[in-house]
Amino acid sequence: MMPTPVILLKEGTDSSQGIPQLVSNISACQVVAEAVRTTLGPRGMDKLIVDGRGKATISNDGATILKLLDVVHPAAKTLVDIAKSQDAEAVDKIKEIAVTVKKQDKVEQRKMLEKCAMTALSSKLISQQKVFFAKMVVDAVMMLDELLQLKMIGIKKVQGGALEESQLVAGVAFKKTFSYAGFEMQPKKYKNPKIALLNVELELKAEKDNAEIRVHTVEDYQAIVDAEWNILYDKLEKIHQSGAKVILSKLPIGDVATQYFADRDMFCAGRVPEEDLKRTMMACGGSIQTSVNSLNPDVLGHCQVFEETQIGGERYNFFTGCPKAKTCTIILRGGAEQFMEETERSLHDAIMIVRRAIKNDSVVAGGGAIEMELSKYLRDYSRTIPGKQQLLIGAYAKALEIIPRQLCDNAGFDATNILNKLRARHAQGGMWYGVDINNEDIADNFQAFVWEPAMVRINALTAASEAACLIVSVDETIKNPRSTVDAPPAAGRGRGQGRLH
Image (cartoon, rainbow, N blue to C red; front, top):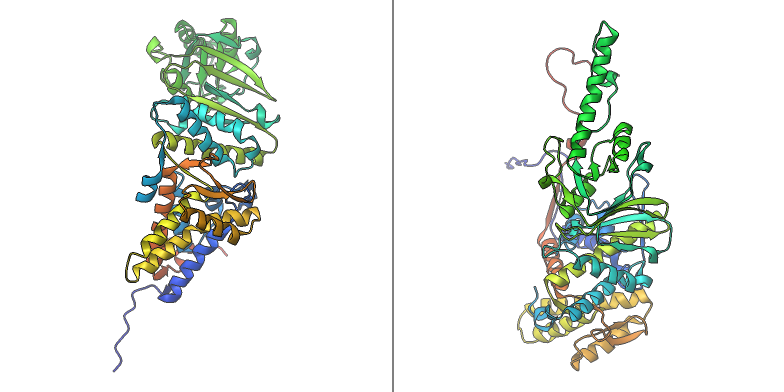
């Protein structure tokens, strides 16, 4: 008699297992790798990705491409998730050969940071302006305090003008908000102003929007209108009495309030985005108030200079000389919207690299140099180990050569010839020799200032090793039937269970 089968999974569940599943996982991960492979290096190509809403994004940033791709294969999705983590931050050999730049020598440290930023920007759309932007990125990061908070660097995009018209503002800058009549009568520049940061609405509300009030005489109606005006004027008077000259509010500031402030030589801006209001608070001090009843000096911020300036077709509010926290704003100029978005992503990469280089002051040579040195080291090390482990370490050494090989392929070089030269040079002790993109040859990339933080390479190798181990360790995938996801909710019990057809 045959034993009765035990059913553990719901009918329709897709279950794949064994060697075919392992091969499928590896193939899926190779497809993901192929998608970003051609973006590597200064001669890497860009990808045009169109999402479900029809929005087009042009980028050669691997993390951005993987984020925008709608990956559904479970193993490939795991690889994408690990790749995303690389933007946020194990190898003894890297630590051993990395070159440390002394933090005490400010000039040397700055040179090192600029070289790291230029290396990060050399493969981007803005590579022709990498010297200009590398200096700007280093200036921006150096303005921050020891915590190096990324949110203290604001990036604003203004269409029109040339890339070289981009500027770094030592303070907070944001676009002029919607304004009412009377705004142009307000002063547009102050020295050492006090700043009130509010989450208070300063405008009259139409009665029909708020409540229904029944009155019997004109006097009663007028009393209600007068009361509302008095409430508004009482708020405005308290703000004026506080001594604040610049009034920023997350909520609207109406035409009456705008004219009131203009008559008293005060500046106001309503509907300020929350992000900009918080950055102003962190830079200029003070705190965001939900009431005007306690506007004492402790809750007011201040800066050395406030000014409204025209940039291209936009007007921007600038707060400079901020005492509380060190902050800055990069204002990008350029043509097409997609180009400016890619420029912003490129600068984000460079900023992250410079931050890591400050936190961990060890650098290695890029351009495939560190990968070739590690490959040579592992190949030599594998020969000292008996057994099957030798094959594994040898395979890892060979895999590391993919980086310089891909750099050659993307630049149109003879990869076999270049790699043979690199292997020979590294065997002779040329530790920092890598691919020379400009001359179709090999060169000492440390001398050529193609630098990147050692921590970035350590993190990349660690993440890659973890991803490979994870994918190889999975031999079965179980997918729930789609019907359980897309099925409509079950009808409730009781009366009225009819269906409409």
